[in-house]
Length: 184
Length: 179
Image (tube, rainbow over all chains, first blue to last red; front, side, top):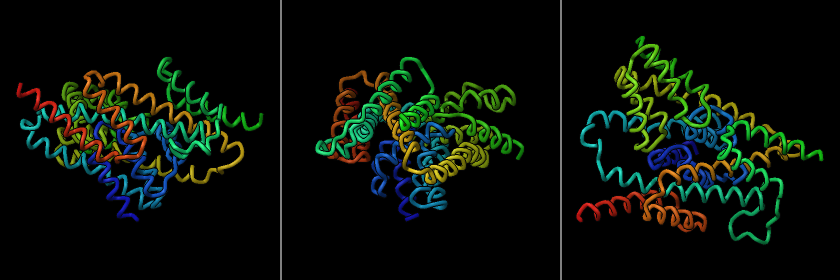
């Protein structure tokens, strides 16, 4: 299991262009092979927001910890760090050849575009799971509409994008609202 | 050795107190390494920050490795890298352990359900922000749409889509280059 966690995060690291959020779609897909549910993944996102540090490191540690305990977390965090330790010395060795390579830039631009689609799809999956209780897009029979979740989802998006309110504050606020609604 | 300890300390501090992603570390790094100790100039720091984004892997860590290597060679790279990773690793391990002990019922479940909804909002916001700055050419919009639909319908895995998108980007560019 530890070896599997290690190789999974090594793969995620080397394919993870464009930062933490772009990597989350890879992590979502790969961790579901270990048995991670959409709710667990959504909780991972919440912890990413609440705990300081790079999102990719936080996420790797979480998945490793959940599926492999202490050693699992160590393996996943180390594995996801390896690309940096490989590319930095390599780049400094061959700086001029890689720098300003137009092909590399072209590839990166389209990977960024791809990541928009990938992140958006993951966001839709979480929305379907939290606001409609659906396991996937075709799961209409079990659909169960949750008004509060959808309202919080939309409100948090608008407050974050328009009013620039920090994700930490919004996460804690949503938790407090959810807590209170249990008693109403 | 003294430089290594400074790198470790600065990155540990920056890592422990900056939320929501690694780039937020930069101002702290700038203040500590450029202004207070003048170990590296601002221009190099931000050049490395931009460069780090073009490599696969954890951007904040790549950036720390660049800065560490520049300041003190291979050992500097390891100390800065360790500093950038350790706070997130330790804090997240503890948080995950605590999270696993949370009761998934009653008011706590109700709070978690509400929090899960916000995680979708932040992913939508991330997609929106990246789209605003990167989806200008028609080809990129098509790539984004295809990746979105294929992932949602579960046709093709994300790793395959990422590699294919990179290839398409290179092909489109070499097509333009010939003209």
